[in-house]
Image (cartoon, rainbow, N blue to C red; front, side, top):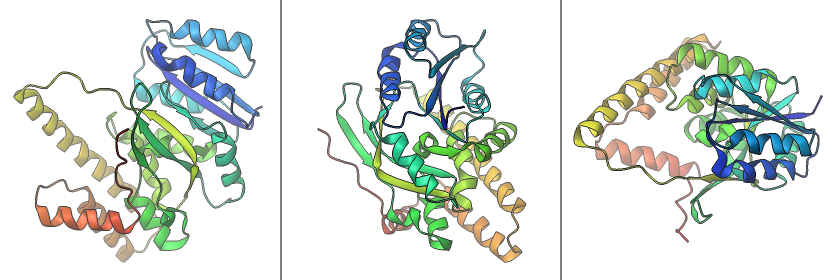
Length: 294
């Protein structure tokens, strides 16, 4: 059994999959297995995956008979292995070659944490830097300061960090049962870990995340419908967080405090004063301004 399992959920990912798998193959940490979960792709995804499986026994390829949807495919890849540590890798992302080694070492030296997370570099399809998303040093602090920083400085990209698998499986099962949307499912999955202060970061472990061009402009009706959908999903996510808080063993006064903080932070009103306050809080926690485009 490998020390670290890496799940690669993919659907029609042939354009970038080979580079992503090669990056995993060349990691300095060698005790890994790479599980490719193909959501019934219709392109060359299967051919690329099988090529890696034939050349390296650490690779395994699973093809679903039908498209199960993105989140069930993510869940299948974390439930399949029996390793102690687990990470996901998007089929179009790469990382520094010491990525797994750094995050694994971080969890070994911090048994009170369940997720080791990277610094994210958002890039274009041709590799140009768009912006950096470094973790605030406060994320690594213990106690209430670290918890607050983790809750309100949570990056969805942390979902591609390294987890203790035994804690991730129940977390994603709860999300699948209580949060029915793809939008922000990663935030919903990560929230319990951040709430309990179980995250730690290494800004020298680099995740290169490809940002694809936006599609054609939406019509006014489409923009309105999307805005309405986001309001519904944001409300559902907020309710999910409130339920989680109620399930904790905090005192009632502590629960009220976190309920109030979560309610405020997830508001998306257009008033300028609340927005400025929110950005000021983010800045005080080490928010990194977008990098200049190269």
